[in-house]
Amino acid sequence: MERFKPAIGPSLVLIAAVVMVAVSAVTDATGAGRSGRRGSRTTVMRLRLPQAVSRALTRNLRIADARLAVQEKEHQRRSAFSDFFPTLDVQYVATSDRYRQFGNVSGFAISHDSRRPQVFPKDYPYRIDPYRTFSMIGTITQPMYTGGRLLNNYKYARLGVDYSQIQLDVERQDLILEVYESYYQMMQAEKLLDVANESIRALEALRNQTVEFFKAGVVPKVDVLSTEGQLAAAKIQRTQAITDRETFRASLLYLLRYPQETRLEIVQDYQYRASRYRIPAIYSIAANNRLEIRQANISVQQAMALVQTAKADLIPSVTLQVQGSRTNDDWNPLDHEAVNDWQIQGILSWAFDMFRTRETVKERRATEARAFVARELLVEQIMNQVKVAFLNMIRSERDIFNYRKAVEFRRENFQPRRSRAPNGHIAVANEVDDQ
Image (cartoon, rainbow, N blue to C red; front, side, top):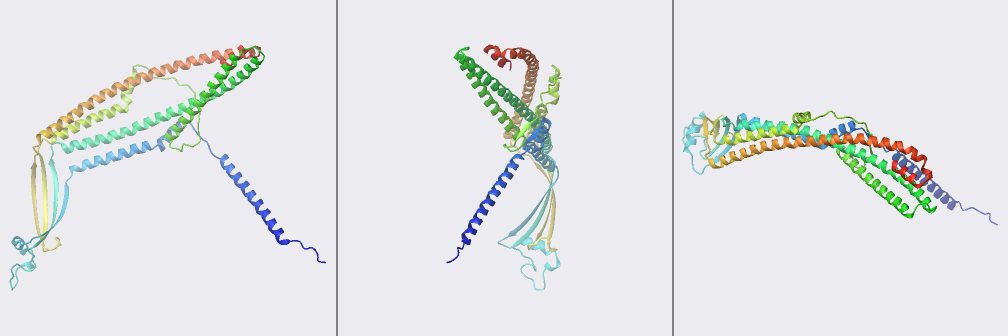
């Protein structure tokens, strides 16, 4: 009789399978724990208003674009300044003629001894090719008088640099203003969300109390429906407050140039700061500080420079030109056998396109007049904006004072009515109204 032998192979396979399942379960649990810890370690960016402004000025691409615009205008100014200096033009000319050029023969024959006739004369001197010429020509041109065209072009370019530098400051101020608006709008939305949540909690308590009173026959069913309607309206207000908060958060993240899914919180600052501005001092302050007025003045000066540039085309221009050349009958004009030549020219040019130039001058003058009108219109608009902003600020300060009085009044009535709340439905409604 054979003894019983256990099946060792299948048992080992089963044990190995159990171990693998256990290890995979432990690995999954460890990975889940790590991912949970990573999620819990997700930081929340908390900013104050000065921090938000500084980061926006550092990261926003509008400031970088404005700086690049300044560099662009600076290169244009240097380009216009280079027109005052002489220009150098270098040419290499290769000519092949069908017939012999005896002028080349006589010119090259005296340039070097090896090119003079030999013992056995030929039709043309030794080593002189009468069919080909190779020349290197250098020309230096210096404008002497242009009627003020170069000077006014440079003035226009220099004013463009000043305009772009002021535009950089304008972009910086506009960005700061947008950050302020988005910051305080987000803060207001968060406060309104808190108020909506408090209203929902109070109205839910009132709804429950009203249902109890209705079951007891104290109030009619219309009061229950009215409370349900008020609760639904409060929930709608909460949804709108959440939407506004996320919208303003997205705007602030866009200005800060952070990803839209960044978790951002702001430090709420409700400290009241009284305004120190008064009429009529605000008008002179705006006239001195608004950068747009300085830009309008620069635009007027640029228009005047364009008028002078157009008028310069009505005046003849004088140019000095110095030209030197070196000619040879082979490809290397720098060879010692080449022939030199040079000349100096004074060129007086005057284009008699009178009708086109006159109309161009009239067009530039109309542009100059429009620049004057645009500047005056801008000043009037700024003064109107200053007056409207001042009136809105005065109204807001008065509203702050009135709301504070209303809050104090409600707070004084809240405690007595809360003590009488269990006595009736009307007291409960008054308590909710005070809250």
